[in-house]
Every structure is written in structure tokens, then in C-alpha cells.
Length: 326
Image (cartoon, rainbow, N blue to C red; front, top):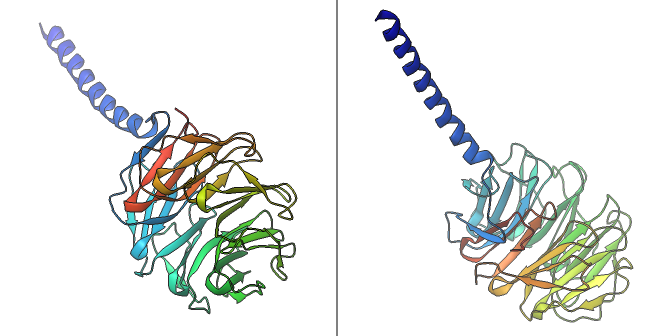
């Protein structure tokens, strides 16, 4: 009888321990092995403010910024978002991170924010301008550029401790910037503005686009190959470093505001009314994807051919792990 009781007690204890272990394991598995459905999924941002910029450094860690100093951060691919304190109510236009710790944000009113701890704290840097700032791009932990109103181009070589003004050769509003190394880059803006540098911005050269409306976003993958998105569904492509721009058929007439490529062939563009278009042949053909929203989309970021995010009006955050394809 005693042996039977001991054996029964032993089995009960094992069952309890197994149950506790299983509960813990299931909880972790839910977090680590959660599978998103095919296509684009809407994430709960917890806000209804306009989001203007998004950047991810890997498949889990990213930031979104926007209206009234909003900064959101995720460590689980966007399933959950936490608010970070920006210290400003200015609209935040662009965000660029190099790793889990080091990032910069461009903002209206000439504000630049910087973090070295993943956004736990943000510090304002002295920009030297009151012009609103939009695009931001860093090529390494020290060297970066920010562009904005009235032809503003700012450059730093010390992580933003000091910012200097570069001569952009234009007074037009500049919206977006893309560099492929520490020397070679492009900036686009209103009235079809596209300027190019091959010396880190010491000199900027105007490249004649022949376009008179606003260029909203630019993305280059190498010295020669790049794309620019604009109003009325216009997408322009160059294989000559911006010297010649070729109009591609996007299949949409909606304004496009963001573009992201992961190589010389595969990319996405986003815009008004939830528009997302996708190409796998360098833009020879663009296919519209189902976004699950009619809200305007302002920015897009992909880290691979499958994994990406888009953000926009009313706190919209979309995520895909299938390249947007259903």
C-alpha cells in the first residue's frame, strides 16, 4: 500500500511539473513561432495618428514615427508596439536605424533626434536650421545626411554631434535621400528635382528629370540602378545613375509616397488609398497587391523578399512575411 501511494504521488508531481513546463513552453512558442497569414496583415499600433516613416533592422526590431512627436517601437515584428518618448510635438518625418541601439529621426521645425539605446531615450541634436526636415540616411555610425525644405541638405561625420550644411544647388523642397556608399547618393524633391553626388555631398549636381511634379521617394541599389516614385502613380527607373529616367507603368493612378527595394529586381511602392504595387523584374511589370486598407500609405520598408512593413494614416501599420503575395 505504501509503495502504491508513493508511486501515485510521484506520478502526480511529474504531471504537475510537465503541465507547468508545457504552459511556459506554449507561451514562448506563441511568441517565437507565430505565423502571419499570407499577404498583408494589419497590425494594432494603438494610435490613430498619421505615421510618416518606418525602419526595421531585422525581422523583429523596428520603429515607426509620425504626427505630434509619435515614436513607436516593436521587438516582435509588429505584433505589439510600445510608445517611446520623443520630447517634442513636432511631426517626425523620417527614421533610420543602423542596429538595435543607434538611430536618428528627422522632423519638422529643423529638429533631429538621436538615440544610442534603441529609443529608451532620445536626445535632440543641433541642426542649425529651422527648416522642416524629411528624409534621413546614415551609411555608417558616423556619416549621414538629412534633407528638407528650401533645398536643405545637412551632413554629419560624427554621428550628429555636429551638422553642416551642404550646397544642394536648389531651393526646392527635398523629400527623400538614398546613398549606396559613403560617396555616392541621390536626393529627390518637388518639381521633378533630382540631384546626385559622387563625393559625399561636397558637390551636388542637378540631373534633369524632365518631370515637373513632386518626386516623393528614391531608392538606389547600386551605382546605376534606382527608382523614384511620384504623383499619379508615376514610377521612374534609371540604369544610368540618374542621368536618364524611364517612366514605368505602375498600373495605378494613385499618388505614391514610399519605395523600397531589396535588390536590383524586387521592390514595392506604396501610396494613397492603401495602394501597394510590387515588382520582381526591376519594374518591367508592377502588380497591385491587396493591402487590407483604404488608408493612405506613406512609407515602406523591406528587409528581404518576404518580410516588410508599410505605415500611413490613422496609425496604419501593415506587415507581410510573404512579400505581400497571397
